[in-house]
Image (cartoon, rainbow, N blue to C red; front, side):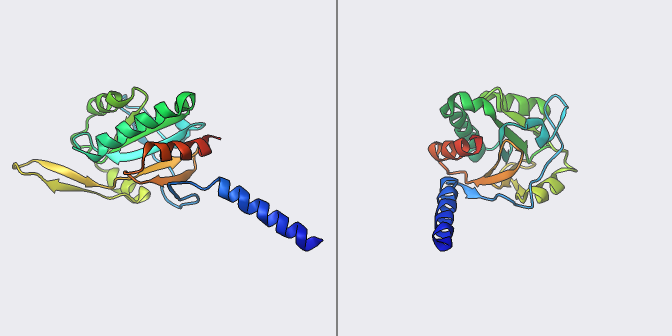
Length: 189
């Protein structure tokens, strides 16, 4: 009888685990990306605690990015729309890896072009190396064709935090909207 109860309990546990399976890479319990303290375009210092109760999607990029950054932010707009009313429970944060060119005004206009609720955050050039290390992201200046011009090479994944502020998922830049929506619905409960 004890063995049958044990097997039943294990089957129930496995079934419950299967229900929580995410499409994106589950990084629950990761020892990185714990928090930040970065200025928003108005100069207010923001941390993860400011968004408690919402799922938070963080993407690192830069406003002059020709492809991955605008594509990702457009996709996040579609994700919020596809979530309907629950889209209000999602906060998208765009953190620049190019604080030299991405002024607060430029970040505000850039993120608002995708969704007025998206928020751009700007580390100082001095903060950026430690922030990148803390979030395990890559960024590097890449010389442009014209003298003095440059682009930025950078990681192209998004991090997703649950409404309690815990890092849960790493989403590849080529993930489709439907997949991201399914994962967010699980996190939002």
